[in-house]
Image (tube, rainbow, N blue to C red; front, side, top):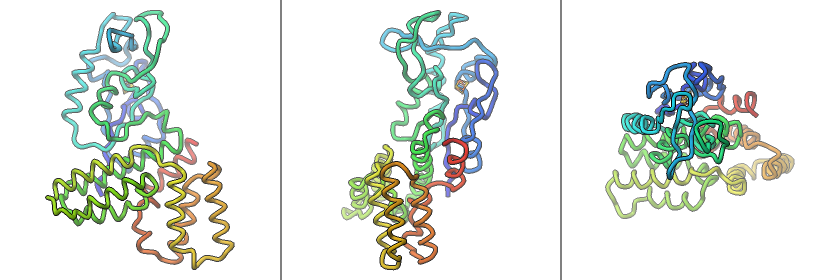
Length: 316
Ligand code: SF4
């Protein structure tokens, strides 16, 4: 298993690099450290600003916002853009970004844009200058901020994509179609929960009836797989995957056990139960009855268990 690689804003629990010399405690980053390779970055420090430093702000400009430092009158837009290009060019393959929200450099969607450099009202919001370049360069990678990850569904979606991306990277590096077949088999339930049309399309790519070269097949699969996981799964599709899994045991369960599961399923459908409750029940039945095909399915453990419990205790 290749460890996922995530680029992370350095002030999220890693370094006292904010404009005021502070750090933001971030339990998600702390928990991820054990399972992923973090690439910490503070773009403002990297363009030569000190710690502490006068704060920056995005200011409405001709066509696009500028990154200004009102206290010094400096326009740092070009410096930030040049740094972003050189940093992103030099990155090894990565599986996602976790950036600081609301920052004029790192915020991915909610950095305030002001009408002027000083004492002017906010007139909108958008990505910070560094984040904007990340979003443009990596449209098919998971890119989130720590604020959005306080939402359990978004957090689990992010973790799922990041760990799936690392597994996919391992298959791409192997250039082996046999490894791709295994990968696809292990992700069938996950794909069923995310996007059934993509599941069928990816099945056709893996079958490779046209006998195309491995490189082409792998590249096409990777595109389709990332697209399949681009949006959070919808509950009806997840329910369908859960029902499909239930089908493996239904003739060995008592009516009371089945009824219990269907009640939980209903509660999940209505948003009253988390997915992890149903997955827990299915996993217990997998242990009891033994179902090798289901055992392989990463739908039941798309990322390390500790990240599920962290989210329950620390964030939700
Ligand atoms: S938000 Fe980004 S630029 Fe600002 S302190 Fe954190 S890492 Fe540095």
